[in-house]
Image (cartoon, rainbow, N blue to C red; front, side):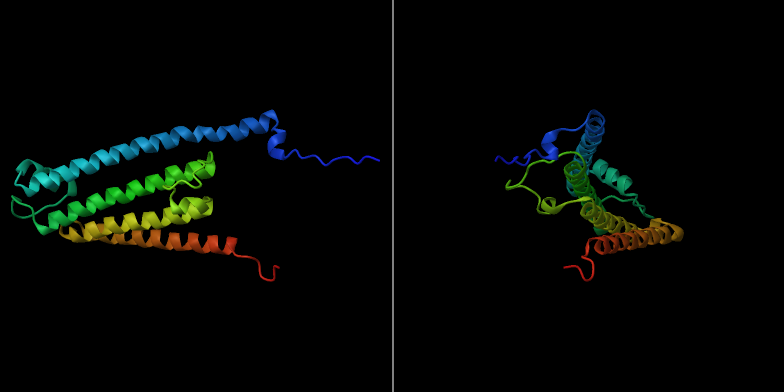
Amino acid sequence: MSTAKPSTQTPATAGLRPIPRFIFASRWLQLPLYVGLIAAQGVYVFHFWVELLHLLEAAFGNQTALQALVTSIGYKSDVAVTSLNETIIMLVVLALIDVVMISNLLIMVIVGGYETFVSRMDLEGHRDQPEWLSHVNASVLKVKLGTAIIGISSIHLLKTFINAANYEPKVLIAQTAIHITFLLSAIAIAYTDKLMTQPKAGAH
């Protein structure tokens, strides 16, 4: 007496019907968006090196580069600026750090978003695989993005307070309130994610 063998065909190998297949394939429409972010990353790299070159030239007394730096950071003084001072250097360095942090945010969105919403990159075992990418999902990505935005906001706020003499009090208050809002939002997202992922009480 022969017994029927159970089917070894999985839903993945069985194939999708045309409409579900079309809907699932629509995820590739996000690819141009990530390519656009890569282009934006290139713009940030170019901007970083322009600002760094101006800083180096200004350090050697180039007045044109110095004025370009003063204009880019929005620094104002009652006397003419003819040489680098500690405040200008600090503001420029913070601006460079700001570019780096935004660039890191872009990488997180590009790599994590593609891996989560478009297709696997098959980076397992690769020596350069980011540590956070091995356990990334939509919730983890939201928390990491929230943390990155808080870091960027902190840099902006620090730049504003260093150059506070050139801002109105309402601008300082508004930026502080926005930063606190970002902080509370990130805490709320992390807490909500914790509630959703923790095992139910009494579960075995």
